[in-house]
Length: 213
Ligand code: GLN
Image 1 (cartoon, rainbow, N blue to C red):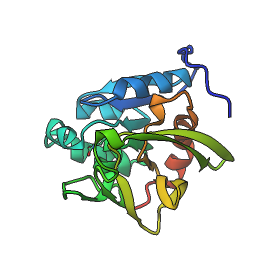
Image 2: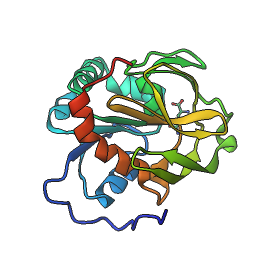
Image 3: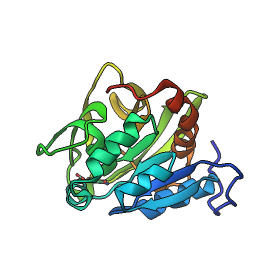
């Protein structure tokens, strides 16, 4: 698939307002990708701001730092956001925060998607790598270019979880209800298929409601 133009387009009229959790990590790259697709983007730094958005991206970064910066108030606000069926996309550290179970070492997480992830499971920073993948993004297959940076590995997926892309035999992009997560960073490439898919989840996720993952 041809890469999207990366010049920020004008906000499409009536487009969805999407938040990017902007406490830490590469939130600016996600905001840029979403704006290129015509979304109105808000940087989210306080839980109360979740009331004003239709979907949320939790970016990559360092999940332990996110946990500290989120304090006590973000977790209940994010659970409430999920309970309202609002789409959430977590990349890398964002996936780790959303997972039901985290290993390597164990740490607390929101449990909004029924997967077990192991942190830093490919090794250290210098074991970071890029790969081309075929994604099954409902509307058809899409070629994805994936950047893995100190990435976690998904070690288990629950029965409600659908695999949308794999690297070899391992799931790397999965969805359950309104939550989609990837172990890689599409926002660091010119291939915006995953972000476009996420923006398209708005209507269906609200209709089907959250699946208890
Ligand atoms: N290794 C990081 C963590 O455990 C995630 C890395 C990333 O988001 N690229 O939180």
